[in-house]
Amino acid sequence: MAQGPANDDRAAARRLSIGDEDLAAYIAGGLGEARRSEVEGFLACNPDVAARVMGELHRRRRAGGPAARPRRWSQAAAALAACVLSGLGGWQVARSTIADGWRENDGDAAPGYVEDALESHAATEARRVMVSQIDTPVLDRAEIARTLKLRAPVLPAGWRVVDAQVYPSDDGPALNVVALAPDGRRLNLFAVRANTAVTDAPVVARRGRRAVVYWEKGSQAFVLTGDDSRDRLLREARAIAQST
Image (cartoon, rainbow, N blue to C red; front, side, top):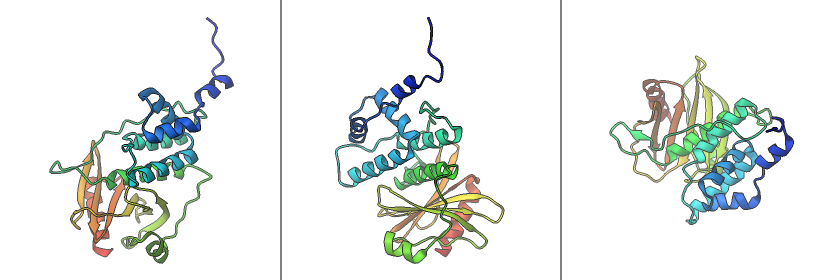
């Protein structure tokens, strides 16, 4: 049987047939498994649309809407990074499988804002390779306090801010700061308002082989992520917690 060429534009058009009704149903949690996967693939390669959908999901959750939080948004964020990095024109990309459940060393579940930090990290890594997305290496503490009602973190001596962005979260607007340590290590520090009863001493949480460190101070939470080992992340978190 004859097959169409691999670069058949008509086939690409069929793959990209995602409309407003599909997006609305996705936000409302009304799609079946197969169609939801297709919509998430489309969002992975259309970051502008994905940002609007993510914002609507957060608004619905804060308003107590009927739709439960989609477990797959972190997967879609990871797929976005994979799509950008691969340079594919379509949206049939390999989707990362991210296990649910960040856990502390004693087995307790980590607060929900840890997942929000992971999503912001994934989006930040996607922006890193996008020519149209410009880094903002400025940390205006007064503006952050006035607009976001957040205290900007105080970084250890020698660290350099390379990007600071605001992302939506379940707890309101959050700040994600990317910084380079003197030895070139790249770390992400996420800050958001929180009302959970978490210690001000940094705590390690794990999911698979990956580790993050989080803590709270007053009505604010911080999450530190990066490629460092658990012990090194913990040392860096303690230094930031003491100075912020």
